[in-house]
Length: 132
Image (cartoon, rainbow, N blue to C red; front, side, top):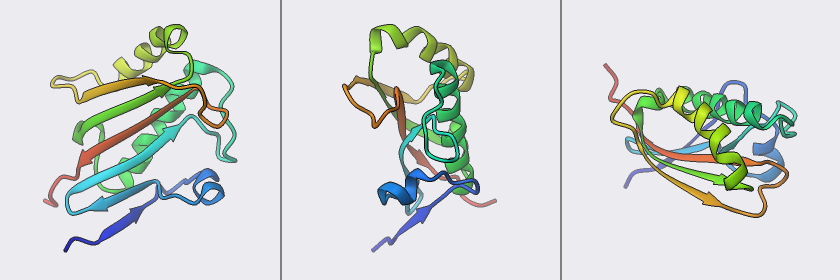
């Protein structure tokens, strides 16, 4: 039986402890990353929407790196948006900078009415590359 292993980025923010969850769980060669938000180190939201999205991607990269993975190892993305119609264009501008090589991971975007003060959240499943 594969044991699950908690993964945290080097510069983990305050939300993990405040809300009692792991940044990611590694199970075999799969990495299940909790929803990453555009938080500052104290856990508060970045107020500017585009910067919040960018920070969410930077937080995501930090979690992936802690497991030995990159954005290229992601197979599934789910993003949550508090105002999808208004946020879609600026979200896509940031997303397209980070996912700019085909094949892209599959992606599901979901409109929600609450994200604990945040406007966007990104969760992923990645396959961790074998050690060279």
